[in-house]
Length: 338
Image (cartoon, rainbow, N blue to C red):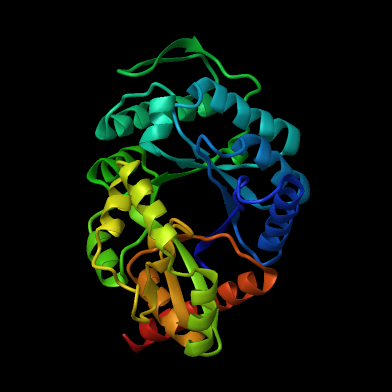
């Protein structure tokens, strides 16, 4: 496949310590076995440190790339560059960075970070530019920005050119798209239905999506499994509403305020898991052909990277990879017809 496929680690607060470690190792090794490029290590105030988790992933895989969620409020850009170059020194491996400007407003308040939404993207731009300069320069770096200033700062150990990190930026707001374009990095978003995604992606650098896949041999089996895994509950709706109120994220607001697609009907694109607080991304649900058809439309619209939701089993990961293979075949067939 030509697409960059990433999986997602399990949440460290959703299970006990030993179970979390087992699942982290299982998903990492199976993701590598099925040809995934990497694995997202997301982060917020309630979760375990993503850098320590990444070392566990590196210890149990050979090529899989940890995609570390990076929020400027948590550490200085020099510390980030130092961690990346140290990982390169010890493991001889590269990592990816998932650049994140915000998070839950309660998390930011607890960190005494009052920075407004669009200004956080300005800060993220400076933050990333400093990291990039430190990792690529052979001399001291001086940077004079609004949020960060450094003077003749040099990174040790130096970073090998072939292990420079990959950069991805999460967000769907205008500020996120502008930041992605300025930095020259690939944008990642939680997608709307493919018709809307195709239109919004036409003149932007948003080339990646984060989404869940649940495909079965029949439509009925897929939806039975989907309803069992992600039941619609009153408590889930309430928790989702609380999460919406605690976030100033544009994608969260946009999906939350959508017209309820998928809550009662059975389209391929389904917001049920998102709107009942089971996960933060939409799902594609249906038989293999239905899901592959929908997925091929995202690929045709310019999607180059896909971060899939945490695979609950090896069978789930296997079926997901099969869907992507089918989607690519459909895309190739459509291109040949043209």
